[in-house]
Length: 397
Image (cartoon, rainbow, N blue to C red; front, side, top):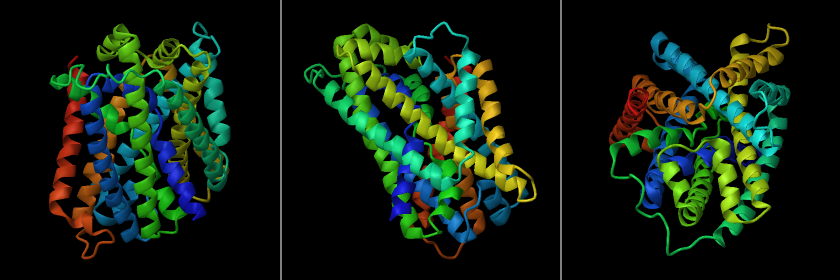
């Protein structure tokens, strides 16, 4: 039960990250009704494809990365695609989180005009030092961070709810009838529920117990949905009622990370709200950075093997250094990189696992739903649409 709780919080903590800032910005285009419906639909796809991934690990009888699963059940092409897409995804997400944490630190301490690398490098160094720890220590550290998120979220939502005008809510506003709104929002929304880098790590951590793993990914993915919906609805309602111009800027995509935090603090009229909004944003991104960092570090260390001296040190360094460079070289790219990561995540979390599952031709299933052709087909089509949306975003405005 102790490991199960820790694993649930690790999944939830990894999922609750950049979405805290990104979802209010992106969901403003869809309004509360369609934004909430889209979140629930994406959660269903995310949870089902989590079962597909765990099914593969259970058939392998050990936690393996997607590249290793591809080599075991399909062949070299699937292995190459799995390894390549996983690494691109992980490094992209780490870049997003380092950029987000750096932006929040600059905003919180009044360092708006500070040299970005001067903040990004110390932030990356802190992540590097934390990732040198064994997973069971990181598990407990993550629990502390996640409890902090829930505590701050409770206080913050209580304060914000007192400012909500129920007679003036953005239920069906924005540009939900425009295809471009969905094209821009869905990839970011999908990435906001990303915890797929943890499959191999948590499969081993939970001793390959199918019942525990099912509960871990069910509750671990459901918690972020509840938090995201309550947070996004509250934020959009108060912004729509108190500052319609800001809401219009969000619909137009003209608000960045610390911009939303600052404006939300001012709108609420409560002095302590800035610290609360900053706190939940920082902790949410930190838990995601920790979860993705663990998965990336473990996968790199696994490929190094036990013969490489200082493998943990080297793996942690490789995990943090390239994303830090990307965060420095590509400024103002929080939403852009998050959307790009959604395209990679769709291939990694939906398309490739389903392909490997079909290629494996397994005669039995630990989770019967993973043998349902209609659900598999629906999930596969959703994955293709997410990729198509993000490709469109690269060429269209």
